[in-house]
Length: 261
Image (cartoon, rainbow, N blue to C red; front, top):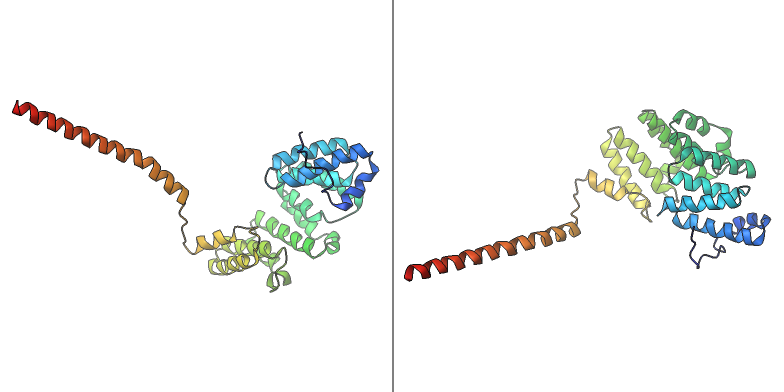
């Protein structure tokens, strides 16, 4: 797959670059450039990212960073079985448990919420950092909802992190998930409160909490672009009507002239 000339491979994280030092220099550069493309496209073009991840995987399948990148690319394309296999491979290579929450979410994607809940209660969770533990809580709550256990999902999300006043990278998503669970349970007034709190914490627009809040408040958004397009479509019709009127007037004038003759 083509790679832009401005992508050198030096953009990758230093830890990944260190992993690639086990490869011949030219090969390491090729793998690094493909990994850069995976990271660059993952959010906006998941299919493209997946393609580059497969190239990197073909070149260096024994590098943990490559397996992890392939896992995230597959995950972004909802290829959960493939993603889980890659994450497991990366975990075996490094012994790192940071991927535990996303592995559990892959189990959800495969229709196995019970397995995700088992993972949420495993000893590995205690080894996660705070961000990882919050992510695991979100996955567990999602699994409860998969099973139709709304009240349990709400309780799962109730935590010191949810109640904290300080804003952390996970705060908006945690508040949003809690608000969404409350709304699903029919607790609309509480849901509105927590969607508002999610908006306060969502400084980079990572959720659609503001839209959900507006929806609860009965606010309707008007698409100005669509209105302009409608006006453009209607304009020729008005012109055509004016043209018909002018033709009718001409015909009436001709008739009057005939009568005089």
